[in-house]
Length: 275
Image (tube, rainbow, N blue to C red; front, side):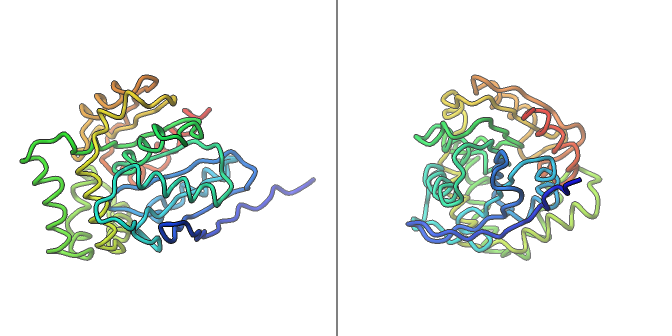
């Protein structure tokens, strides 16, 4: 009897024209690839043990630290677009030798995923999973932008990562979320780097997923927690409706950070869709 190969996690650091990009890389290099993009207040570390669980199911799982997060260098421009982040993602995947992959994105990461899918590199994506998708605020009115963009920038300047870590978990988790979920969210927020966070918020302010959605050709699953008050269900349903080959699935009782609150339900949705 031959033992199954051990699941190994490697911390990757690759160089490209914009600097350094870092990522968690788990599983066999020959396995089908599954790439994870985190949200504005997160990092690769936010995915926790679910990456290893998916690797044990036979996937190669890669979760990046977006530019300006973790040990990844910020992008060279002060106000990058989703396409700028998508270019960095393509450089990472090229360096790792990943040509075809399924793409999983959460919250702000959805804007990067959409930009990647409609770029010249989009044919590399086999399937697309968008969790708690933010629509972006490129087409929002001034009042909404003051809250969603200017307000976030001001909060980072005023509170710093440590202050945000005390404030934010109650907003992005469902009422009654476990103490462990709150601790996980706070731990990741404390590691935010202000420069990278503010670049990502500016990108959030310039993108419009409702305009990009109709150009996404991939079979897509849109996930939303029924208790999400950051990107509520009604908006997530509209986003799913804007994507030609999308279907919608609700995760009952979960908030915006759905994958933190119930990793088993989140993983089951992914595996069912990929199957």
